[in-house]
Length: 77
Image 1 (tube, rainbow, N blue to C red):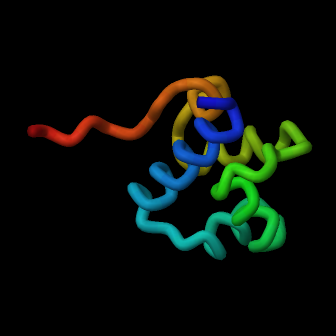
Image 2: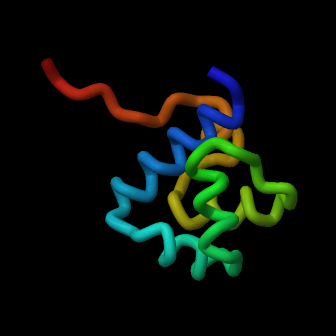
């Protein structure tokens, strides 16, 4: 899995876990909805580190974890 794919997967997971809409997250960090959607679809990564910091603060995770760690919780069998 590429960093873009991991980031997109983590972003979707964290947003849904937090019960936020894409529009809500975009508004919270001050970007256009379409830009956020590109991130969550794995098309691009944020070009400014400040966006990564804002996302990590919003979701309560480290930037490194947001980019590199699979944050999706395993579902019990």
